[in-house]
Length: 227
Image 1 (cartoon, rainbow, N blue to C red):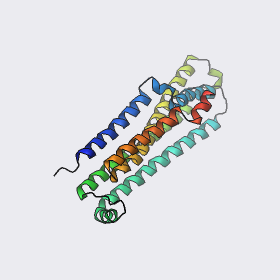
Image 2: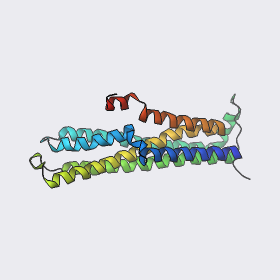
Image 3: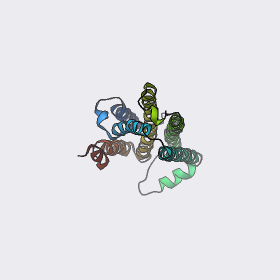
Image 4: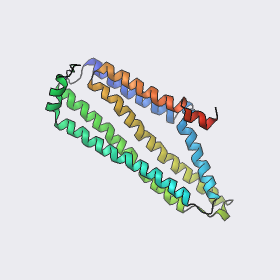
């Protein structure tokens, strides 16, 4: 017995295509260079150059600690979400009974429900790995902070190379954090599939539209560009 209908497969293909297309546009296309994430990548390098000029760098380490704590929070949230997904998988019969009595009258088989829940858990597992790796990279950046040359040596070739290395590592940490958050947004869109494949397609497009708007049409981006 095939677990999904034709519309389900179309909606799932649409979901994957939108996710991949959005990620590719943001990370690998020239258009993505105008986004908010790319603007912040530029300021990471500015930060490293400013830090190189300072004798006292406690404030920089405090900011780094705040970034690490935020990443740790999202990694922990991912684990909780994974646990919630597995709970839904174990309580399939009870959940299906409740859903069948709802006004929407959502009809689904146990096989479909379990497959959808497993897909949701996979998204959260992906998010956890991204946040966990981002946290590890932030730890590496903190080590690079500690290895930063003294302000008296800021004009040395070693200092210039260190700034570039640290900024690149910092950018990589931010990129993986962004991927984890992107997975969270698409996980919310994925919930539309539990209602119907058509709702799933709409929520997928809506999630991409919201994220795209924040990258290119938000007041935060206008503030950075002084528009």
